[in-house]
Amino acid sequence: MIPYSPHPHQEPVAGALAVNVVNISGAYEHQRAPALNGVNLQVPVGARIALVGSNGAGKSTLLKLIAGLLPLHQGTISLFGHSVGVCRHRVAYLAQRSEVDWRFPMTVRRLVGTGRYVHLGWFKRPSAADRQIVEQVMAQLQIEHLAERQIGQLSGGQQQRTLLARTLAQEADLLLLDEPLNAVDVATRAIVSQVLDALKTQGKTVLIATHDLGRLEQEFDGALYLCEGREVQPPPGSFTGVHVGEWAVESRPLVAELVEATSHLPLTTSHQQPTTNPS
Amino acid sequence: MTNWLLEPLHYTFMQSGLLAAVLVGLTCAVLGVYVVLRRMAFIGDALAHTVLPGLVIAYLNSWNLAGGALTAGLATALLIGWLSERREMREDTAIGIVFTGMFALGILLMSTVRSFRDFTHMLFGNILGVTSSELLFIGGVAIIVLTLLALFHKELELTSVDPGYAAVIGLRVHWLRYLLLCLLALAVVSAIQAVGVVLTSALLVTPAATASLLTQRLTPMMGLAALIAVLSGVVGLYISYYGSVSSGAAIVLVCTLCFGVAWVARWARSK
Picture (cartoon, rainbow over the protein chains, first blue to last red):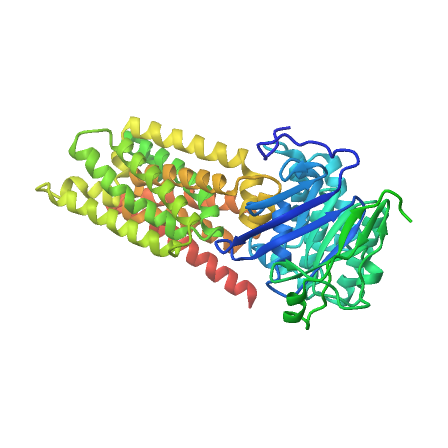
Protein backbone atom coordinates (compact mmCIF):
# COMPACT_ATOMS: atom_id res chain seq x y z
CA MET A 1 0.00 0.00 0.00
CA ILE A 2 1.24 3.52 -0.86
CA PRO A 3 -0.31 5.90 1.73
CA TYR A 4 -1.52 9.34 0.67
CA SER A 5 0.32 10.98 3.51
CA PRO A 6 4.11 11.35 3.25
CA HIS A 7 4.43 9.72 6.69
CA PRO A 8 4.00 5.97 6.83
CA HIS A 9 1.03 5.12 9.05
CA GLN A 10 1.98 4.11 12.58
CA GLU A 11 -0.04 2.24 15.14
CA PRO A 12 -1.05 3.92 18.44
CA VAL A 13 1.46 3.93 21.29
CA ALA A 14 0.18 1.68 24.08
CA GLY A 15 -1.07 3.62 27.10
CA ALA A 16 -0.92 7.02 25.41
CA LEU A 17 -3.76 9.52 25.55
CA ALA A 18 -6.04 9.46 22.51
CA VAL A 19 -5.81 13.25 22.33
CA ASN A 20 -3.32 15.44 24.13
CA VAL A 21 -3.69 19.11 23.31
CA VAL A 22 -1.22 21.28 25.22
CA ASN A 23 -1.60 25.02 25.33
CA ILE A 24 -2.38 25.66 21.68
CA SER A 25 -2.90 29.16 20.34
CA GLY A 26 -3.15 30.63 16.91
CA ALA A 27 -5.15 32.79 14.54
CA TYR A 28 -6.57 31.45 11.29
CA GLU A 29 -8.04 34.45 9.50
CA HIS A 30 -6.90 33.13 6.11
CA GLN A 31 -8.89 29.96 6.63
CA ARG A 32 -11.81 31.91 8.08
CA ALA A 33 -11.57 30.02 11.37
CA PRO A 34 -11.74 31.64 14.81
CA ALA A 35 -8.54 31.99 16.80
CA LEU A 36 -7.64 29.79 19.74
CA ASN A 37 -5.98 31.09 22.83
CA GLY A 38 -4.24 28.70 25.20
CA VAL A 39 -6.50 25.65 24.94
CA ASN A 40 -5.69 22.39 26.72
CA LEU A 41 -7.48 19.11 26.31
CA GLN A 42 -6.54 15.66 27.46
CA VAL A 43 -8.77 12.83 26.30
CA PRO A 44 -8.13 9.25 27.42
CA VAL A 45 -8.82 6.36 25.09
CA GLY A 46 -12.51 5.39 25.18
CA ALA A 47 -13.85 8.73 26.43
CA ARG A 48 -16.65 10.67 24.78
CA ILE A 49 -16.05 14.41 25.10
CA ALA A 50 -18.26 17.32 24.12
CA LEU A 51 -16.83 20.60 22.80
CA VAL A 52 -19.38 23.19 23.78
CA GLY A 53 -19.66 26.85 22.87
CA SER A 54 -21.46 29.30 20.66
CA ASN A 55 -20.70 29.87 16.97
CA GLY A 56 -17.23 31.31 16.52
CA ALA A 57 -16.02 29.97 19.85
CA GLY A 58 -13.41 27.83 18.13
CA LYS A 59 -14.94 24.34 18.36
CA SER A 60 -14.47 23.65 14.66
CA THR A 61 -11.02 25.22 14.68
CA LEU A 62 -9.95 22.87 17.48
CA LEU A 63 -11.35 19.82 15.65
CA LYS A 64 -9.66 20.90 12.41
CA LEU A 65 -6.33 21.33 14.18
CA ILE A 66 -6.63 17.84 15.66
CA ALA A 67 -7.62 16.48 12.22
CA GLY A 68 -4.56 18.15 10.68
CA LEU A 69 -6.61 20.48 8.46
CA LEU A 70 -5.06 23.64 9.89
CA PRO A 71 -1.41 24.29 10.63
CA LEU A 72 -0.47 24.38 14.30
CA HIS A 73 1.20 27.67 15.24
CA GLN A 74 1.80 27.32 18.94
CA GLY A 75 1.54 24.46 21.42
CA THR A 76 1.48 20.74 20.75
CA ILE A 77 -1.07 18.14 19.76
CA SER A 78 -0.42 14.45 19.97
CA LEU A 79 -2.79 11.67 19.00
CA PHE A 80 -2.18 8.20 20.42
CA GLY A 81 1.33 9.33 21.29
CA HIS A 82 2.20 10.52 17.77
CA SER A 83 2.16 13.95 16.18
CA VAL A 84 -0.77 14.87 13.94
CA GLY A 85 -0.66 13.13 10.55
CA VAL A 86 1.09 9.95 11.64
CA CYS A 87 -2.04 8.04 12.69
CA ARG A 88 -4.34 9.22 9.89
CA HIS A 89 -5.92 5.81 9.39
CA ARG A 90 -6.90 5.77 13.09
CA VAL A 91 -8.48 9.26 13.06
CA ALA A 92 -11.79 9.95 11.31
CA TYR A 93 -13.25 13.42 10.85
CA LEU A 94 -16.84 14.37 10.13
CA ALA A 95 -17.04 17.87 8.67
CA GLN A 96 -20.11 20.05 8.61
CA ARG A 97 -22.38 19.18 5.70
CA SER A 98 -21.79 22.48 3.91
CA GLU A 99 -18.20 21.48 3.11
CA VAL A 100 -19.28 18.80 0.61
CA ASP A 101 -20.21 19.49 -3.04
CA TRP A 102 -23.56 17.70 -2.97
CA ARG A 103 -24.17 18.41 -6.67
CA PHE A 104 -21.27 16.21 -7.73
CA PRO A 105 -22.54 13.02 -9.41
CA MET A 106 -21.91 10.27 -6.88
CA THR A 107 -24.00 7.56 -5.27
CA VAL A 108 -24.42 7.23 -1.51
CA ARG A 109 -22.63 3.87 -1.62
CA ARG A 110 -19.61 5.37 -3.36
CA LEU A 111 -19.39 8.34 -0.99
CA VAL A 112 -19.56 6.00 2.02
CA GLY A 113 -16.89 3.89 0.30
CA THR A 114 -14.45 6.83 0.28
CA GLY A 115 -14.11 6.14 4.03
CA ARG A 116 -11.98 3.12 3.07
CA TYR A 117 -9.56 5.14 0.89
CA VAL A 118 -7.15 5.95 3.70
CA HIS A 119 -6.50 2.20 4.03
CA LEU A 120 -6.17 1.74 0.26
CA GLY A 121 -3.82 4.59 -0.65
CA TRP A 122 -2.82 5.32 -4.25
CA PHE A 123 -3.85 3.03 -7.12
CA LYS A 124 -5.62 0.36 -5.03
CA ARG A 125 -9.29 -0.39 -5.50
CA PRO A 126 -11.70 -1.37 -2.73
CA SER A 127 -11.67 -5.11 -2.00
CA ALA A 128 -14.65 -7.36 -1.22
CA ALA A 129 -13.93 -6.83 2.48
CA ASP A 130 -14.02 -3.05 2.01
CA ARG A 131 -17.34 -3.30 0.21
CA GLN A 132 -18.73 -5.46 2.98
CA ILE A 133 -17.81 -2.86 5.61
CA VAL A 134 -19.55 -0.20 3.51
CA GLU A 135 -22.75 -2.30 3.39
CA GLN A 136 -22.59 -2.85 7.15
CA VAL A 137 -22.28 0.82 8.08
CA MET A 138 -25.02 1.78 5.63
CA ALA A 139 -27.29 -0.75 7.37
CA GLN A 140 -26.25 0.62 10.77
CA LEU A 141 -27.26 4.15 9.74
CA GLN A 142 -30.39 2.87 7.97
CA ILE A 143 -29.44 4.24 4.57
CA GLU A 144 -29.04 0.93 2.73
CA HIS A 145 -32.22 1.68 0.74
CA LEU A 146 -30.51 4.90 -0.47
CA ALA A 147 -27.30 3.13 -1.57
CA GLU A 148 -27.77 3.76 -5.28
CA ARG A 149 -29.26 7.21 -4.88
CA GLN A 150 -27.37 10.32 -5.99
CA ILE A 151 -26.03 12.34 -3.06
CA GLY A 152 -27.67 15.42 -4.56
CA GLN A 153 -31.12 13.92 -3.91
CA LEU A 154 -30.73 13.42 -0.16
CA SER A 155 -32.47 15.34 2.60
CA GLY A 156 -30.38 17.05 5.27
CA GLY A 157 -30.76 14.17 7.71
CA GLN A 158 -29.89 11.63 5.03
CA GLN A 159 -26.80 13.63 4.07
CA GLN A 160 -25.70 13.63 7.69
CA ARG A 161 -26.23 9.88 8.00
CA THR A 162 -24.28 9.31 4.77
CA LEU A 163 -21.33 11.33 6.05
CA LEU A 164 -21.44 9.61 9.43
CA ALA A 165 -21.53 6.24 7.64
CA ARG A 166 -18.41 7.26 5.74
CA THR A 167 -16.73 8.23 9.01
CA LEU A 168 -17.62 4.84 10.52
CA ALA A 169 -16.46 2.99 7.39
CA GLN A 170 -12.96 4.18 8.15
CA GLU A 171 -13.02 2.01 11.31
CA ALA A 172 -10.98 4.62 13.16
CA ASP A 173 -10.23 4.65 16.90
CA LEU A 174 -10.69 8.41 17.30
CA LEU A 175 -13.71 10.13 15.78
CA LEU A 176 -13.89 13.91 15.46
CA LEU A 177 -17.49 14.91 14.78
CA ASP A 178 -18.30 18.53 13.96
CA GLU A 179 -21.96 19.23 14.84
CA PRO A 180 -23.34 15.83 13.82
CA LEU A 181 -26.78 16.79 15.14
CA ASN A 182 -26.99 20.23 13.57
CA ALA A 183 -30.38 20.70 11.84
CA VAL A 184 -31.31 17.04 11.47
CA ASP A 185 -34.67 15.33 11.82
CA VAL A 186 -35.79 13.35 14.88
CA ALA A 187 -35.21 9.98 13.21
CA THR A 188 -31.63 10.87 12.31
CA ARG A 189 -31.05 12.16 15.83
CA ALA A 190 -32.15 8.82 17.28
CA ILE A 191 -29.98 6.86 14.84
CA VAL A 192 -26.94 9.03 15.57
CA SER A 193 -27.45 8.51 19.32
CA GLN A 194 -27.53 4.74 18.80
CA VAL A 195 -24.35 4.92 16.74
CA LEU A 196 -22.60 6.94 19.45
CA ASP A 197 -23.61 4.35 22.04
CA ALA A 198 -22.30 1.57 19.84
CA LEU A 199 -18.97 3.43 19.49
CA LYS A 200 -18.80 3.73 23.28
CA THR A 201 -19.28 -0.02 23.66
CA GLN A 202 -16.54 -0.62 21.11
CA GLY A 203 -14.19 1.52 23.18
CA LYS A 204 -13.76 4.23 20.55
CA THR A 205 -12.76 7.76 21.54
CA VAL A 206 -15.19 10.40 20.33
CA LEU A 207 -14.93 14.21 20.30
CA ILE A 208 -18.11 16.02 19.38
CA ALA A 209 -18.62 19.72 18.78
CA THR A 210 -22.16 20.54 19.77
CA HIS A 211 -24.65 23.30 20.49
CA ASP A 212 -26.94 20.90 22.22
CA LEU A 213 -26.52 21.15 25.97
CA GLY A 214 -29.67 19.25 26.94
CA ARG A 215 -28.27 15.81 27.59
CA LEU A 216 -24.58 16.42 28.15
CA GLU A 217 -24.53 14.50 31.40
CA GLN A 218 -26.22 11.40 30.03
CA GLU A 219 -24.28 11.30 26.79
CA PHE A 220 -20.76 12.46 27.58
CA ASP A 221 -17.90 11.68 29.92
CA GLY A 222 -16.66 15.23 29.92
CA ALA A 223 -17.03 18.59 28.24
CA LEU A 224 -14.71 21.36 27.15
CA TYR A 225 -16.44 24.72 27.17
CA LEU A 226 -15.02 27.21 24.73
CA CYS A 227 -15.71 30.89 24.43
CA GLU A 228 -14.00 33.07 21.84
CA GLY A 229 -11.21 30.57 21.52
CA ARG A 230 -10.59 30.21 25.25
CA GLU A 231 -11.63 27.61 27.74
CA VAL A 232 -14.06 28.84 30.36
CA GLN A 233 -15.63 27.47 33.53
CA PRO A 234 -19.05 25.91 33.93
CA PRO A 235 -21.79 27.63 35.88
CA PRO A 236 -22.16 26.30 39.46
CA GLY A 237 -23.80 22.91 39.64
CA SER A 238 -23.40 22.14 35.99
CA PHE A 239 -21.87 19.05 34.49
CA THR A 240 -18.13 18.80 34.87
CA GLY A 241 -17.34 15.24 33.99
CA VAL A 242 -16.77 11.77 35.28
CA HIS A 243 -14.09 9.14 35.58
CA VAL A 244 -13.07 7.32 32.46
CA GLY A 245 -10.98 4.29 33.29
CA GLU A 246 -8.00 5.38 35.29
CA TRP A 247 -8.44 8.99 34.25
CA ALA A 248 -10.47 11.54 36.17
CA VAL A 249 -12.25 14.35 34.43
CA GLU A 250 -11.82 17.50 36.46
CA SER A 251 -12.74 21.11 36.19
CA ARG A 252 -10.20 23.90 36.27
CA PRO A 253 -10.09 27.20 38.20
CA LEU A 254 -12.14 30.12 37.03
CA VAL A 255 -10.77 32.93 34.96
CA ALA A 256 -12.71 35.70 36.65
CA GLU A 257 -12.98 38.32 33.94
CA LEU A 258 -13.99 35.77 31.36
CA VAL A 259 -16.86 34.54 33.46
CA GLU A 260 -18.06 38.09 33.82
CA ALA A 261 -17.91 38.69 30.12
CA THR A 262 -19.59 35.47 29.13
CA SER A 263 -22.00 34.79 31.95
CA HIS A 264 -24.78 34.10 29.47
CA LEU A 265 -22.91 31.03 28.36
CA PRO A 266 -22.66 27.72 30.13
CA LEU A 267 -19.11 27.99 31.34
CA THR A 268 -16.83 25.14 32.11
CA THR A 269 -13.43 23.88 31.74
CA SER A 270 -13.25 20.28 31.74
CA HIS A 271 -10.09 18.50 31.74
CA GLN A 272 -8.87 14.98 32.14
CA GLN A 273 -5.96 14.42 34.42
CA PRO A 274 -4.31 11.18 35.34
CA THR A 275 -4.84 10.16 38.93
CA THR A 276 -2.49 7.68 40.42
CA ASN A 277 -5.27 6.11 42.45
CA PRO A 278 -8.64 6.30 40.78
CA SER A 279 -11.36 6.45 43.39
CA MET B 1 -24.36 6.25 -49.43
CA THR B 2 -21.36 4.01 -48.75
CA ASN B 3 -19.49 5.77 -51.49
CA TRP B 4 -20.41 9.09 -49.99
CA LEU B 5 -18.93 7.96 -46.67
CA LEU B 6 -15.83 6.28 -48.11
CA GLU B 7 -14.82 8.85 -50.69
CA PRO B 8 -13.20 11.33 -48.29
CA LEU B 9 -11.20 8.50 -46.70
CA HIS B 10 -9.13 8.14 -49.87
CA TYR B 11 -7.36 11.35 -48.98
CA THR B 12 -4.52 11.23 -46.48
CA PHE B 13 -5.45 14.66 -45.09
CA MET B 14 -8.93 13.36 -44.26
CA GLN B 15 -7.54 10.22 -42.65
CA SER B 16 -5.18 12.12 -40.38
CA GLY B 17 -7.83 14.81 -39.82
CA LEU B 18 -10.35 12.21 -38.65
CA LEU B 19 -7.79 10.51 -36.41
CA ALA B 20 -6.86 13.88 -34.89
CA ALA B 21 -10.53 14.78 -34.36
CA VAL B 22 -11.21 11.45 -32.62
CA LEU B 23 -8.15 11.69 -30.36
CA VAL B 24 -8.67 15.34 -29.43
CA GLY B 25 -12.38 14.75 -28.85
CA LEU B 26 -11.67 11.79 -26.58
CA THR B 27 -9.09 13.67 -24.51
CA CYS B 28 -11.04 16.89 -24.12
CA ALA B 29 -14.39 15.25 -23.45
CA VAL B 30 -13.18 12.98 -20.64
CA LEU B 31 -11.16 15.74 -18.99
CA GLY B 32 -14.02 18.12 -19.70
CA VAL B 33 -16.26 16.24 -17.28
CA TYR B 34 -14.04 17.45 -14.43
CA VAL B 35 -13.91 20.91 -16.00
CA VAL B 36 -17.71 21.08 -15.95
CA LEU B 37 -18.26 19.44 -12.56
CA ARG B 38 -15.55 21.48 -10.81
CA ARG B 39 -16.78 24.66 -12.51
CA MET B 40 -13.45 25.25 -14.28
CA ALA B 41 -14.95 26.14 -17.68
CA PHE B 42 -13.57 29.65 -17.44
CA ILE B 43 -10.10 28.27 -16.64
CA GLY B 44 -10.24 26.08 -19.77
CA ASP B 45 -11.08 29.08 -21.90
CA ALA B 46 -8.39 31.18 -20.22
CA LEU B 47 -5.75 28.49 -20.82
CA ALA B 48 -6.61 28.31 -24.51
CA HIS B 49 -6.22 32.07 -24.86
CA THR B 50 -3.00 32.42 -22.86
CA VAL B 51 -1.40 29.82 -25.13
CA LEU B 52 -1.56 32.27 -28.05
CA PRO B 53 1.53 34.39 -27.19
CA GLY B 54 3.50 31.14 -26.72
CA LEU B 55 2.45 30.02 -30.19
CA VAL B 56 3.24 33.37 -31.79
CA ILE B 57 6.66 33.70 -30.11
CA ALA B 58 7.54 30.17 -31.22
CA TYR B 59 6.38 30.95 -34.75
CA LEU B 60 8.33 34.22 -34.98
CA ASN B 61 11.52 32.48 -33.84
CA SER B 62 10.89 29.37 -35.93
CA TRP B 63 10.74 27.20 -32.82
CA ASN B 64 8.54 24.19 -32.37
CA LEU B 65 4.96 25.49 -32.20
CA ALA B 66 3.63 22.79 -29.88
CA GLY B 67 6.61 23.40 -27.60
CA GLY B 68 5.85 27.11 -27.39
CA ALA B 69 2.17 26.46 -26.75
CA LEU B 70 2.92 23.83 -24.12
CA THR B 71 5.33 26.10 -22.26
CA ALA B 72 2.80 28.93 -22.18
CA GLY B 73 0.00 26.54 -21.21
CA LEU B 74 1.87 24.88 -18.35
CA ALA B 75 3.10 28.25 -17.06
CA THR B 76 -0.49 29.51 -17.03
CA ALA B 77 -1.72 26.33 -15.31
CA LEU B 78 0.82 26.77 -12.51
CA LEU B 79 0.01 30.48 -12.21
CA ILE B 80 -3.72 29.76 -11.95
CA GLY B 81 -3.07 27.04 -9.37
CA TRP B 82 -0.98 29.47 -7.34
CA LEU B 83 -3.57 32.25 -7.63
CA SER B 84 -6.36 29.97 -6.44
CA GLU B 85 -4.45 29.22 -3.24
CA ARG B 86 -4.33 32.87 -2.20
CA ARG B 87 -7.24 34.96 -1.17
CA GLU B 88 -6.15 38.49 -1.97
CA MET B 89 -8.27 38.56 -5.10
CA ARG B 90 -11.18 36.52 -6.39
CA GLU B 91 -9.84 33.72 -8.55
CA ASP B 92 -12.00 34.47 -11.59
CA THR B 93 -11.01 38.14 -11.54
CA ALA B 94 -7.32 37.24 -11.40
CA ILE B 95 -7.70 34.76 -14.24
CA GLY B 96 -9.67 37.30 -16.28
CA ILE B 97 -6.86 39.83 -15.95
CA VAL B 98 -4.09 37.37 -16.79
CA PHE B 99 -5.82 35.76 -19.74
CA THR B 100 -6.95 38.90 -21.53
CA GLY B 101 -3.50 40.41 -21.03
CA MET B 102 -1.76 37.35 -22.47
CA PHE B 103 -4.21 37.15 -25.38
CA ALA B 104 -3.63 40.83 -26.15
CA LEU B 105 0.13 40.20 -26.10
CA GLY B 106 -0.39 37.38 -28.60
CA ILE B 107 -2.40 39.61 -30.92
CA LEU B 108 0.11 42.45 -30.55
CA LEU B 109 2.95 40.13 -31.54
CA MET B 110 0.88 38.83 -34.45
CA SER B 111 0.35 42.37 -35.71
CA THR B 112 4.11 42.88 -35.93
CA VAL B 113 4.08 40.48 -38.86
CA ARG B 114 2.75 41.97 -42.04
CA SER B 115 0.27 39.25 -42.89
CA PHE B 116 -2.27 37.92 -40.41
CA ARG B 117 -3.00 34.98 -42.70
CA ASP B 118 -0.33 32.74 -41.21
CA PHE B 119 -2.10 32.92 -37.89
CA THR B 120 -5.65 32.04 -38.86
CA HIS B 121 -4.93 28.36 -38.23
CA MET B 122 -3.89 29.25 -34.68
CA LEU B 123 -7.08 31.16 -34.06
CA PHE B 124 -9.47 28.81 -35.83
CA GLY B 125 -7.55 25.55 -36.20
CA ASN B 126 -6.60 23.57 -39.26
CA ILE B 127 -7.37 19.95 -38.56
CA LEU B 128 -7.08 18.94 -42.22
CA GLY B 129 -3.56 20.30 -42.33
CA VAL B 130 -2.38 18.33 -39.29
CA THR B 131 1.10 16.91 -39.86
CA SER B 132 2.26 13.48 -38.79
CA SER B 133 4.39 14.92 -36.00
CA GLU B 134 1.41 16.93 -34.73
CA LEU B 135 -0.65 13.76 -34.88
CA LEU B 136 2.00 12.03 -32.81
CA PHE B 137 1.81 14.85 -30.25
CA ILE B 138 -2.00 14.63 -30.11
CA GLY B 139 -1.80 10.86 -29.67
CA GLY B 140 0.80 11.20 -26.92
CA VAL B 141 -1.33 13.75 -25.08
CA ALA B 142 -4.38 11.48 -25.35
CA ILE B 143 -2.46 8.56 -23.82
CA ILE B 144 -0.97 10.68 -21.01
CA VAL B 145 -4.25 12.40 -20.09
CA LEU B 146 -6.44 9.30 -20.19
CA THR B 147 -3.90 7.15 -18.33
CA LEU B 148 -3.40 9.68 -15.53
CA LEU B 149 -7.16 10.27 -15.22
CA ALA B 150 -7.67 6.52 -14.87
CA LEU B 151 -4.82 6.08 -12.36
CA PHE B 152 -5.97 8.93 -10.12
CA HIS B 153 -9.70 8.46 -10.68
CA LYS B 154 -10.77 7.83 -7.10
CA GLU B 155 -8.58 10.61 -5.71
CA LEU B 156 -9.69 13.20 -8.29
CA GLU B 157 -13.29 12.24 -7.62
CA LEU B 158 -12.86 12.53 -3.84
CA THR B 159 -11.02 15.87 -3.95
CA SER B 160 -13.80 17.20 -6.20
CA VAL B 161 -16.68 16.13 -3.99
CA ASP B 162 -15.13 16.58 -0.55
CA PRO B 163 -11.70 18.27 -0.47
CA GLY B 164 -11.83 18.62 3.33
CA TYR B 165 -12.08 14.89 3.96
CA ALA B 166 -9.46 14.23 1.27
CA ALA B 167 -7.04 16.47 3.19
CA VAL B 168 -7.79 14.69 6.47
CA ILE B 169 -6.72 11.34 5.05
CA GLY B 170 -3.47 12.90 3.86
CA LEU B 171 -4.23 13.67 0.19
CA ARG B 172 -2.54 16.81 -1.12
CA VAL B 173 -5.61 18.50 -2.57
CA HIS B 174 -3.50 21.26 -4.14
CA TRP B 175 -1.27 18.78 -5.94
CA LEU B 176 -4.24 17.05 -7.50
CA ARG B 177 -5.54 20.41 -8.62
CA TYR B 178 -2.16 21.18 -10.20
CA LEU B 179 -2.25 17.77 -11.89
CA LEU B 180 -5.68 18.55 -13.32
CA LEU B 181 -4.53 22.01 -14.48
CA CYS B 182 -1.44 20.56 -16.20
CA LEU B 183 -3.53 17.89 -17.93
CA LEU B 184 -5.87 20.68 -18.97
CA ALA B 185 -2.94 22.61 -20.45
CA LEU B 186 -1.87 19.50 -22.41
CA ALA B 187 -5.39 18.90 -23.71
CA VAL B 188 -5.82 22.55 -24.65
CA VAL B 189 -2.59 22.60 -26.66
CA SER B 190 -3.60 19.48 -28.56
CA ALA B 191 -7.12 20.83 -29.14
CA ILE B 192 -5.71 24.07 -30.56
CA GLN B 193 -4.26 22.02 -33.44
CA ALA B 194 -7.80 20.90 -34.22
CA VAL B 195 -10.15 23.78 -33.59
CA GLY B 196 -7.91 26.73 -32.73
CA VAL B 197 -7.57 29.01 -29.74
CA VAL B 198 -11.04 30.53 -29.93
CA LEU B 199 -13.05 27.30 -30.03
CA THR B 200 -10.98 25.00 -27.80
CA SER B 201 -13.03 25.50 -24.69
CA ALA B 202 -16.11 24.29 -26.60
CA LEU B 203 -14.52 20.84 -26.91
CA LEU B 204 -13.84 20.83 -23.16
CA VAL B 205 -17.22 22.07 -22.05
CA THR B 206 -19.96 21.20 -24.55
CA PRO B 207 -19.67 17.37 -24.81
CA ALA B 208 -19.23 17.06 -21.03
CA ALA B 209 -22.15 19.39 -20.34
CA THR B 210 -24.29 17.41 -22.80
CA ALA B 211 -23.39 14.15 -21.06
CA SER B 212 -24.17 15.67 -17.66
CA LEU B 213 -27.72 16.30 -18.87
CA LEU B 214 -28.15 12.65 -19.80
CA THR B 215 -26.58 10.76 -16.88
CA GLN B 216 -25.89 11.27 -13.19
CA ARG B 217 -22.95 8.90 -12.95
CA LEU B 218 -19.35 9.95 -13.30
CA THR B 219 -17.84 7.13 -15.38
CA PRO B 220 -20.79 6.80 -17.81
CA MET B 221 -20.74 10.58 -18.06
CA MET B 222 -17.12 10.44 -19.24
CA GLY B 223 -17.94 7.68 -21.72
CA LEU B 224 -20.94 9.53 -23.08
CA ALA B 225 -19.00 12.80 -23.37
CA ALA B 226 -16.25 10.96 -25.28
CA LEU B 227 -18.82 9.39 -27.60
CA ILE B 228 -20.46 12.77 -28.30
CA ALA B 229 -17.11 14.44 -28.96
CA VAL B 230 -15.83 11.69 -31.25
CA LEU B 231 -19.10 11.63 -33.16
CA SER B 232 -19.13 15.42 -33.48
CA GLY B 233 -15.53 15.34 -34.71
CA VAL B 234 -16.31 12.84 -37.45
CA VAL B 235 -19.65 14.39 -38.49
CA GLY B 236 -18.14 17.87 -38.38
CA LEU B 237 -15.29 16.81 -40.67
CA TYR B 238 -17.70 15.31 -43.22
CA ILE B 239 -19.75 18.50 -43.16
CA SER B 240 -16.57 20.48 -43.65
CA TYR B 241 -15.50 18.22 -46.54
CA TYR B 242 -18.76 18.28 -48.45
CA GLY B 243 -19.82 21.81 -47.55
CA SER B 244 -16.34 23.34 -47.89
CA VAL B 245 -16.71 25.09 -44.54
CA SER B 246 -14.29 25.62 -41.64
CA SER B 247 -13.66 22.24 -40.00
CA GLY B 248 -13.19 23.61 -36.47
CA ALA B 249 -16.42 25.57 -36.59
CA ALA B 250 -18.31 22.58 -38.04
CA ILE B 251 -17.07 20.27 -35.24
CA VAL B 252 -18.01 22.75 -32.52
CA LEU B 253 -21.44 23.40 -34.03
CA VAL B 254 -22.22 19.66 -34.14
CA CYS B 255 -21.29 19.52 -30.42
CA THR B 256 -23.60 22.47 -29.77
CA LEU B 257 -26.38 20.76 -31.72
CA CYS B 258 -25.93 17.62 -29.56
CA PHE B 259 -26.25 19.79 -26.47
CA GLY B 260 -29.46 21.34 -27.85
CA VAL B 261 -30.94 17.91 -28.59
CA ALA B 262 -30.02 16.64 -25.11
CA TRP B 263 -31.53 19.72 -23.52
CA VAL B 264 -34.81 19.27 -25.40
CA ALA B 265 -34.81 15.52 -24.65
CA ARG B 266 -34.42 16.17 -20.93
CA TRP B 267 -37.05 18.87 -21.00
CA ALA B 268 -39.47 16.54 -22.82
CA ARG B 269 -38.77 13.72 -20.33
CA SER B 270 -39.48 15.96 -17.36
CA LYS B 271 -42.86 17.00 -18.82
